[in-house]
Amino acid sequence: MPVIDRLFQAAYPGASESVAKGQLSRTEALALSRQFIQHHHPDAIAAYGFGSAFSDNFRPHSDLDLVVVLPESTALRSRCLMFDGVPIEAHIFGADGIDPIIHFSRRHGNATVLLPVAHGEVLVDSHGQAEEIKRRFIAAFAAGPGGADPKLIDTLRHFVTTQLLDLSGGLVPAEALMVATGVYPSLLQLLFLSSRTWRHRGKWAVRYGEAIVQEMSAKVAQAYAKAVAGDFEEFMALAVGILDRAGGPLWAGHEEELVLQKGR
Image (cartoon, rainbow, N blue to C red; front, side):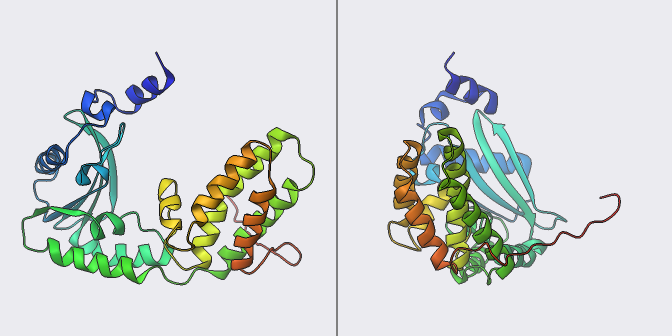
């Protein structure tokens, strides 16, 4: 059995053929999402769907991303489960958690919950509040995160600087590749932090990186591909350019402190 098939079956047990082939339609995604919410969260006051399936662009091995708002809840929960052969990732919270989620998201630059509501489609509106909740999340997402902690920026600057110094110091190919691989996501995070924009991860980091510096994400990706082949010059140049946007390389004078507590 091909490795990708083993991975697919282990991650998505019982997945339908339409999921495997990326053939789930928007109509099917809407109907299935509403059935899932009715089955698992019948008391939901609002719910939203986000991602490729809701724009008729479902890709092989994709899941359905949902946000479900309950009348009340003491926590934000995330659930990944199969429903009628389709993988669903749902974020669930109570209406009393809206303000804390917006505050947390802006404080930490994390748009994981804001984005699906702000850019998603209303699936459930049992109390007439779904559009107002959506408007609040749109406003919060548009406002962007709060200012980043300068210490966090300095920590990233120092990490990237040390890795680039290692990369320029004659490492064996396997070591150099590992360093470049570790630096790649840190560079995009540093770009987001210094530009005071949402700190996306994974594929979203590449997609939304374009909104900060035109073609920057694509350039970093191309430079990383060359680094994998053993040519690090372009990757180093782009990395130093991102460091410069964040205040420049940092090593001499950098300090960090960890408070040690007994038993922890």
